[in-house]
Length: 152
Image (cartoon, rainbow, N blue to C red; front, side, top):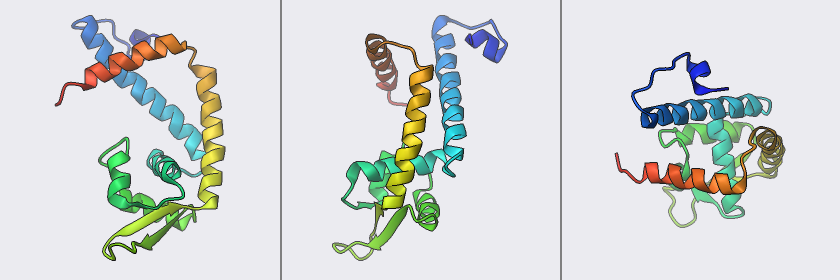
């Protein structure tokens, strides 16, 4: 769907302005698509992100602060997210041996299984919907990184 159809507007200040709206709309579209799939597994986007972060460090444990620093959405309330994942038995929370004031988290076998099932479904959706070539993705990635080089 063209951006103009999606937002029902054809007036843009410039092509740069239009590209900003494209990025914002596409981010919303991707998030909506992801949340629809994650809901089938009883997961939120933030919970999925935490599980992926923990899997990336497995079998090592991670402290809450390190998990928070790797989150896509930086304003996420990581302790609350971990509480919910712990209730589902997808993560374990322990006291750090090094620093008793610190809590460390690890992903469980059940957490790995739900993450794997969810990731397979999401990757299938991506394969079906993203028809850009590797070379095009390289250009897109470079452009997006260039936009983020500006510190706001």
